[in-house]
Image (cartoon, rainbow, N blue to C red):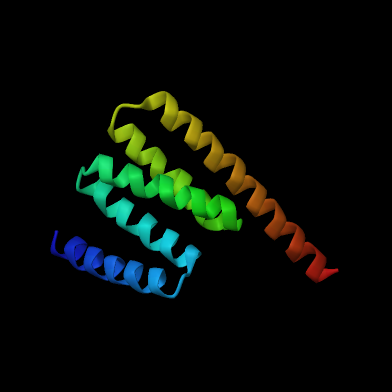
Length: 114
């Protein structure tokens, strides 16, 4: 628990800094990390708010790598709350995006070899 408190402190500090320098992506990453801690602490309402705020930013900025991670972690939150249908839908979003990103990475590597 002490490790999570320490992590929460640093994530909240980074959130303030990213907000001050107007780094939307940084703000979203910090919120995602805080949401993961809140999920572990069973602070589901707070976690969900942060997940959804991060999701909006990741979608607007095209930060697909982070959006993929958000889908996976948000799935865990939904399962913890017994919202299994929503969890299933987000797990599908995660799988689809993960496959898409892996395909792009593979194509890039193949093209680099040729």
